[in-house]
Length: 396
Image 1 (cartoon, rainbow, N blue to C red):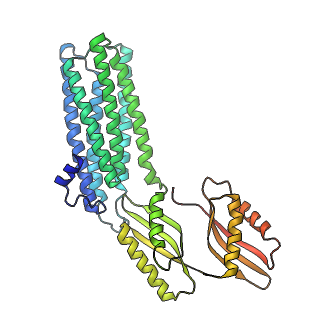
Image 2 (cartoon, rainbow, N blue to C red; image 1 turned 120 degrees about the horizontal axis):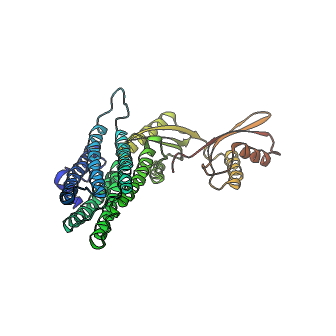
Image 3 (cartoon, rainbow, N blue to C red; image 1 turned 90 degrees about the vertical axis):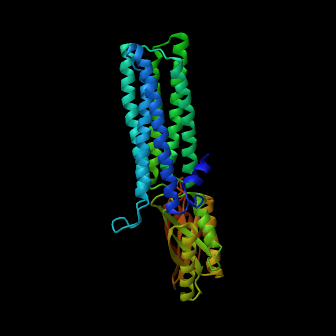
């Protein structure tokens, strides 16, 4: 069904790296959410009115569920605006484009969910204190069953679309849809119990339970949609793919200091250091880096800047010193790596200059690493001075 709708409404639907195609996926998802949530609001409002006609008392749990769908419809409208705005081209004020608006749209969705949950809890609590009682009928239970099925399909649709275009906003909406279906299912269970056992008091308490359920889901959504805005680590598999692709190019001896800045889904800026043989002609080296930048830009659809690091290839003294330093550091933490290693020799001492990459979870400090290196090389002639900088990884 999802693939069928994509084929019907999106031209070149498989080319999800294309910003226009991605935008159309977002618009289709948002439109689907607006229509299906409107249907759900109408169904549940109708059921609430049917229940209220004989007694004049509205079901707070059913109304809470209907209002929640109404906020979902509003959220889909926000997402629709987000997808349209996020695809605006870069301008003088936003040279990296407007892609992060999609994360903001997801955050707005999450905040609306939390606010509605709080209000619904207050209303349900008032009903419980007042001792309100309500009995459901068969028509209402049928409507609720239909609503659950529709909401489950809505969640599946948003999850598939969110995964296809890697959209945090759609994934957040999918989670919201699935939690809504569980909330509606709990209302249906209450309806069955009140209909069969006469437990009319359950409605108010179930309203509170549904509200808390939605509140927890909303808070989780806030956390998930805030991460890209705060600057989360790059995906490890993506970094490995980029590094592997670069290393496959002839002349590239090593890659390090990979930085990935996210300016929206599929809108990334990458930079890294590429090691090449120091004996390579400078014009040839520059041409190699230019070609590598073009290849990565075309393959991954991102902006790229590469810094060239010349290294000595086959220098025995450098290779031996580097191997010894790495062995010392690996004895402290097996995950430590080193790069930009070079020797600068003088008449009285030798400088060993390099960077160490230490995982965030490691207990190794720069001072501790230096102490271990100095101990290992204390008898070296000439004397060794260490010029070491400690880096942290930028991928997860």
